[in-house]
Length: 231
Image (cartoon, rainbow, N blue to C red; front, side, top):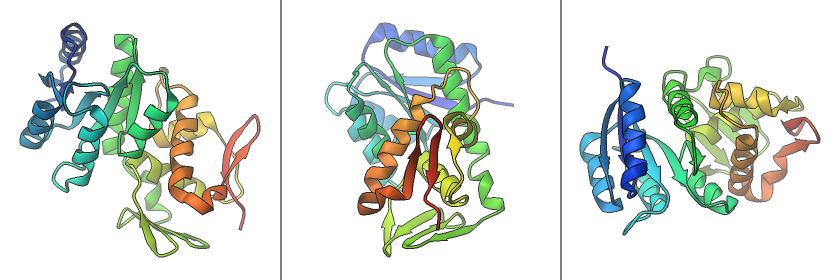
């Protein structure tokens, strides 16, 4: 059985070679581009299962590439892992906000990257498993419909990444229940020894930004994790 296809968009030839080598060793079908415009064109033409996307690229940067992929109905289903050398968390939030499924900070170890790749691809086969029990969740002005894969707040659709949608659906399905970060990681992002609890904080921060005036729907439980406010 053939493995998933992965597009690597990375301008540093040494890093690109390392990523390609390790992906191919895992059995993935890999192709690559060194700049933003060529990478976007390759993604649209070949429709890979996953794009490993550098944030800082010549010409069109990774955030813009991700935004265009997610805005296009033909390519919005492509998973994206953003690779960033920046420590500024706002850049990570921005990348997740336009649709990236995960991020890996540089420098990174090949094992850590492969773990993220496996986790993101696995989520494609487990997508919205929670929807089998609660297809429609209504919490005040918020309506989450897993059949339509749509969240509506105050009658206005909210654009969410797949991870944000799963996170919001899980929390809203259990109002008042506190979930630890590790529980949210395993149920929303996927099991991986290399995924850090801090990833959930980044996703929650991005989700709260999109909820705007209703950001307090997601409450922080000190020293534990998060919960959706009780009805």
